[in-house]
Amino acid sequence: MAKLSDLIEDFIKTLIDDDGTRIIIQRNELANKFKCAPSQINYVLTTRFTLEKGYQVESRRGGGGYITIFKIENSRLEFKELLMTRISDSITFNSALDLIKNLFEKGYISQREYIIIKTAICDRSLSLNINDKNAVRANLLKNILFVILNLGDD
Picture 1 (cartoon, rainbow, N blue to C red):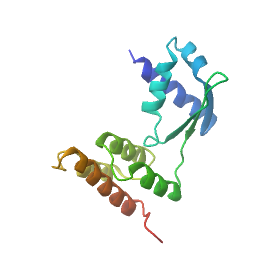
Picture 2: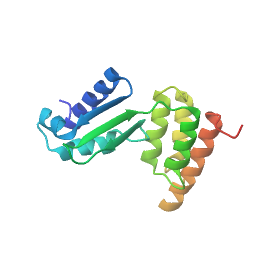
Picture 3: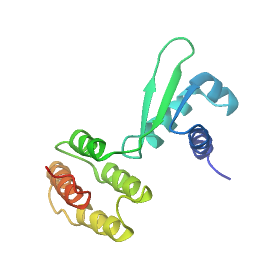
Picture 4: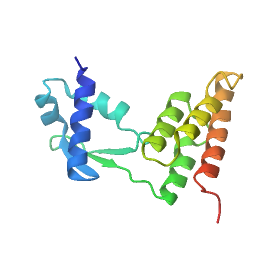
């Protein structure tokens, strides 16, 4: 049987697919539908609907706690901005993996490129202390993606 988090994620993704690229939901109504605490909805939103996974979530307090979820359809400029802001000077392996998995699923990189990037940025490939690993991983990832996605200066 699927976990509650998986069911909530699938439900939200179906709503987004049916509506296009954006939905507005009320946290309490969704919690009532799944007979769970609103914190469970927050957990799903913060772990399953991240920038790395191709989503942006905006939350409005008060008035029932409305949440807007956008499915990001990345343009060349948005990719460059995402890489510069999200990866920044440091990125964990799991966050980097979410990002490249999203790029693969959307068809921006091939399966071969996905595997090569994943191998290049994994902890085994970076035999440094944890802070240095995340900084080196960020630099590697940005540079590889800038070349593959042709995001360099024109």
